[in-house]
Image 1 (cartoon, rainbow, N blue to C red):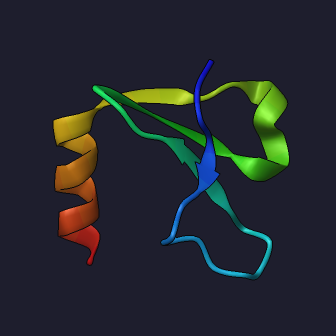
Image 2: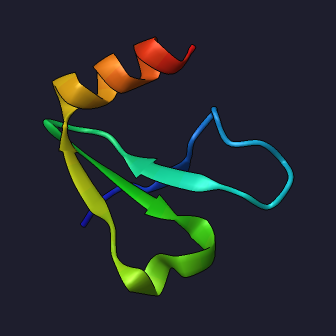
Length: 53
């Protein structure tokens, strides 16, 4: 079972992303959890976050 939490990069406007961090980072839309999630290697997730800062 994954430990999902709201991303600190999500705003308070209702457009939220949840992440489950680990060797593979899971990413999902809080408003559409039933649609599944995207798995991203942790190094790629870190690179993405660094690039958008």
